[in-house]
Structures are given as C-alpha cells and as structure tokens.
Image (spheres, rainbow, N blue to C red):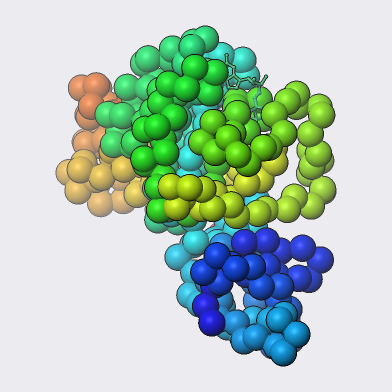
Length: 290
Ligand code: GDP
Ligand code: ZN
C-alpha cells in the first residue's frame, strides 16, 4: 500500500492510505541509513495482521523543510500583514527565496486587509510574478481565491505569530476548529520545543500542514551566494545580459539587474533583500553550507 505520512509522534507514523489512517513503525534500516521519515513523505506500507503497519520505503522527495520538518510541499502560503504585527518585507523575501530553491510555489497573502492595505507591497509581489492575494479572515475577503489556489495541493502556512494563520485556516475549513488567540497563549514558542506538524485534508482536497504558531521565517535561504540570483524570479530575464559572467548584481558595472532596478522593473525592496541575503550567504564559510 502507498500513503502519505500525516502525523509523526514518538516513533509512530500515521499514514493516510486513501483516507484511512494506518499506525506504522518504520523499519530499522531507516535509522541505519540515517533517513528519518517526515510528515508529507509518500511511503509504501505493509499491513500487519493486527491492522498496524510497517513503513518499508520512503519514495523520493520533491523537497524537504526543517522547521517544521515536513516534506513534499507544493505551495507555501506566506501570510503577511500590514496591520500589527506588521510583516517585514525582508522576511517575506527570505522565505520566498527558500521556497524557490525547493521548487515550492509561494502564495503571498496579505491578511487583515480590512485594517490596513499595503497596496504597494501587494503590487511588488504581483508584478514579480507571485500569486498574491488580499485577504481578510475577519470579513472573508479573498478566502475563496485562496481556497481555489491551494485546491488539490499539499501546502504549508507560514508567517509570524499574530498575522492570522489560524484565523485563515478556520475560515477555509470552519469544521476543523483550531485555537485562535494571543501569542503568549500558544504552545511551542521556545526554540528548543519540539513542534509537531500534522497534515489535514480540507474539503477542496488541499492538504495543509498545520503547525501551531510556527514561523519558518526563522529559516535562512541556505544557499551558496552565486545561486541566490536564481531564487529571485523577476531577476531571471536579466541575468544573461550582465557585462560580467560572474556578476553579483550588487553594484557591478554593466549589471542588467541593476539597470532593471533603475528602470523600476525590479522593486527596490526586493533588490535590498537580495543584497542582504547575498551578504549573509557570503559570510557563511563554504564548509558550513549544505
Ligand atoms: P496566528 O498566530 O498567525 O495563527 O494568528 P491568529 O489567527 O491567532 O490571529 C491573531 C489575531 O488577529 C486574532 O485576534 C485574530 O482575531 C486577528 N485577526 C486575524 N486575521 C484578521 C483579519 O483579517 N482582520 C482582523 N481585523 N483581525 C484579524
Ligand atoms: Zn548583474
């Protein structure tokens, strides 16, 4: 049988085999191979007489994330807010770059649109080529559009606490009640707290990784500096036109990316984030990079 791990807890894996959850143990060989099955992994399972199962194989992954530990995400829904807590565009760009490197589509969702309308930032991401939404979990604006975008996909929601992840998920699927509330009331704040991830199947056949209070905004772009340029999709049309083959697009002469920036074809905030990430990537010694 084949299925998707929808939950992992204390050495047990709960595998969704066509709607039925089978409680599994992983074969010892995985530990030997230092392969940890992740939530989101597609696995093959053999059933034991008592109805429990054994995970025999983990199928090749499309991608994997570490915080939270989850695999095979098609779409990362990045929840931002122009109202408190106001989202820093640099954090959006960092998480977008990380997703781009993992061949994971980013949906940029400006929530709390009923309170604040960060129109310029909205245009920035729309023009850069991302599905971008104006959403309000309060009024319901944009919820259907979001539902349509993630239908049939495996997705994860990310964003700082308080931006409205739980509220949006509750709007998408009112039957599944999740805690909505204050930052301090939630569990799993500390860096060293284990956060458990769980996949939920929504009615539109979207599968959502629910990670209470989780923010993958903590994750770096983790890439060699020379590869970062490919993680900014609106740079791609210009990369071949720079005067120097090894152009860093930071302040080089004859840089086509900088020319596009001056012409307003690339947003200043996006380029600022690129430069900041580039400098961060440069400061990581090569032996420390993955
Ligand atoms: P999370 O930490 O990202 O899961 O955020 P929550 O869903 O817990 O929301 C944090 C607070 O913002 C709650 O008090 C929500 O009622 C409020 N909130 C969430 N979305 C919206 C919205 O679109 N408009 C308004 N006005 N408030 C919202
Ligand atoms: Zn350049």
